[in-house]
Each structure stands twice: as C-alpha cells, then as structure tokens.
Amino acid sequence: MMNRNHNVVWDNCLSVIKDNINYESFKTWFAPIKPVKLAQNVLTIQVPSQFFYEWLEEHFINLLRKVIRAELGPNGRLEYDIVIDSSYMQDTNPLTIKMPTTNKRDTQNPSVSMPIDINRGGAAREIPNPFIIPGLKKIKVQSQLNESYSFENFIEGDCNRLARSAGYAVAGNPGKTAFNPLLVYSAVGLGKTHLVHAIGLQTKNNYPDKTVLYITSEQFIQQFLDSVKNNNQNDFIHFYQMMDVLIVDDVQFLAGKEKTQDVFFHIFNHLHQRSKQIILTSDKPPVEMKGLEARLLSRFKWGLAADLQIPDLETRIAILNKKLYNDGIEISKEVIDYIAYSIPTNVRELEGALISILAQSSLNKKVINLDLARQMIDKYVKNTTREISIDYIQKVVCDYFNLPLELINSKTRKREIVQARQLAMFFSKKHTKSSLATIGLYCGNKDHATVLHACRTVNNLIETDKQFKVFVEEIEKKIKL
Image (cartoon, rainbow, N blue to C red; front, side, top):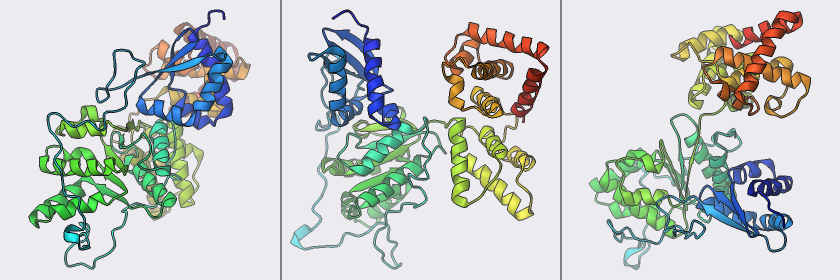
C-alpha cells in the first residue's frame, strides 16, 4: 500500500461515519478526535479522555471497525492515544491505558468504615427524613426537582453539547455509564442547575421506581449540623445511602467544612461502590477547587467533568424564542436579536431582562418595540456601551441579505455569499478590535490577506456602486442599533 497521511485516512473515515450516524452524535463523539499517526496499517487517534474511549468502544466499535478496514484493508487496526489526568494510571507507552483507579484507597487519608446497617438489631426501622422539620406534618421525601427545568426546555448549543449529551446518557442508564460521577461546572447563570434537574426528571421518567434526590450543598450542610446537634448522624448517613441518584448543587460550598466533607466522602463511596449515580455541580473544575480534601477531589475526577460555556448569539436567540413560545408570547425578531446581543454572558440575566420588558409592557400597557427594549436594557445592563462582536456582525449581514448564517463560513464561491462574507470582514475590521487573522478565522477560516482584499473591495464598491453603498449604510445602521 502506498504511503498515506494519517489525516487523509481519518478524514475519509469521518466522511463515512458522518453518513451513518446523526449530526449531534457525530459532533459530540467524533469532532474532538485528532489523528496522531499511521504506521504499518495501524491508525492512532487521540481522544480527550478515558470516558471518550469507553463510549466509542461501547457504542461505535462496529462502525469504526468497518471504516478502518475499508481504508486500511483487512489487517487495518485502530489504536487510541488517551489524554489522561493525574487521577489515572498510565504506562510510559501512551497507548497502554489502565482503567481509572476507582478501587485504590487513598494512601494519605484511608477510608474509614461507616455504618450502613439500616435495620440494626434485626428489627425494621424507618430512617428519619432530614427534610422533615419537627412539628410539621410528615410527608414522603420528594425529589425536589423543578418540572420546568426539563431537557425539552434546555436549549442545546456548542456551549453545552457535551454536558447535555452526557447528562442524557446518564438519565438513560444511571450509575452504569462512564459518567459517574458527572460533574457539571461553569460560571454563574449558564444553566448548571437547569441541566441537573433535567437529568433527574428524565431519570424519573425512565425509571419511576428509582429514588432521585436533588439537594443544594447548603441544605446538606445544615442537615448534617442538625444531625450532630440531635445526635443522629448515622440516621442522616443512612438516608442518603438509600438514594439511587443523588444530585448535589454547588458542591464547592463544602470547602473548609472538614466534618461535612468526611460524611459526604463516605456517602459518595457507598453510592459509587453500589453503582448508584452521583451528579454534582460547581463553579469551577476539580483541579481549581480550593478547601476540599484531596481524596474527595480525586473522586470527582473518576467520571466526567463537563463545562458549560457562554452561549453564542444564535443559542441566546434560541433561548429567548423558547421562553416566549412556552409563555405563548410573540415579539418582533428585531427586539429578540437586540436583547440577545445586549446580554452576552449570562443566561439568567438574559431571561431576567426579557421578563422585565414583558412586565413593563403589561403593567404600563406599552407596545414591545425596540425603543422599549432599549430603555429596559439600559437600566438592566450596567455597561450600556456594549462591544460589537464578529458573530453579531455576521448575523446582521446574513439577516439583511436573508442568507443562512452557516453559508458565510462555507467554501462556496457564489457571488452573493462572497459579497456577504466580504461585508462581514469589512464591518468586523471597522467595529471590533479583533486582528485581521482573527477576523479571517471567524469568516470561513481565511487568512489576513483575504481580509485586507475584502476591505479594499468593499471600499471600491462603495465609491462606484450606488446600490451597494445603500446596502452598506443600512447594514451600518442595524449594527449600531
């Protein structure tokens, strides 16, 4: 067989894989893979983590085997180069992978056995529910899940696709996937709580007999303090050991609370060893958490730590449209675009701004138009001098010419697409602080020379084509809205 480049071979494999699975699965599980080398009919690919390797082997092994053999012949093989963090063991050979050391005890802080005998003394005994306040009517423990925080209402985008896909997999087979624990982390207001509620709700739908519990770390801490005060710590531990799916929100607040961490450590171990699902959220990844014991942090790394990033403009618009649809309200596309553009960093603030505009319209009987939106946003957003972004410019240009946004980044040479792309480059250079290389990267992966050529072309057309000059002036107004 003649010499072939590993990139070419893998690209050929991907073209076949793309035709055999849905787009979301392809983007989640195959787009992050990088081909490393091709030697003696063995293609080596790098996958981001252990769970990626396990997922591919479990769900796509037959497809991978077929495409590799089609490209490399009957003796073709695939090997993995897995990126593994310090919580995993790895030989000097990067292709020799050992499983996560989930059975290995902490050498510095060994595990201490905690009581798990729920029926002590041979007699059945009801475990006290820490959610029941003494003096109030006792009720059966509820999952504490918010029904409105469902997967249906969770808008998917590039910013959250991995975490959402992993969450959906967990809900389909809790405790039995590589994602145990599943740790979802991000800055405030990006949807962590919504996602873990959605996982809990979907799990309840799939497995009505399973006990699913959502709790904030503050609730857990307070319940533990009450158990110490009332001298029933064992009952508190027993209660949590009975969960099939335990969801703990904002686990970073356990920092500095050694006794609470110790109890949570033993509950975690008990659940994990019995293949019960643990789902956590935090405001940062485990490697950046301070004030938590090393043995606890190492367990957070056993499964998957997936982040939620700031949503792009298209995702923010989709979030607003979904909320309006659920509420049965219609407002103009112009207003929706303005809100999404004005609040780029926080989904919670984005929805809050929309609610404020709707309330202002309802209470004062005002029409929801761009002027009202501008008045409310200026009050809602502290910094009213908002920076214009490349993606916003691209959207304005595409909307003006009624073109799909993805075409501006495609390789097509159709005149109207090329012209829209050149205008996007022109306005990006004019209104943003981005370098020519960055603008080119955003506009179809072009180089800086192409951006300069585009700007010169637009300037020439402004001087020689009256209709084109009108286009530029109208787009300029929309960008500055």
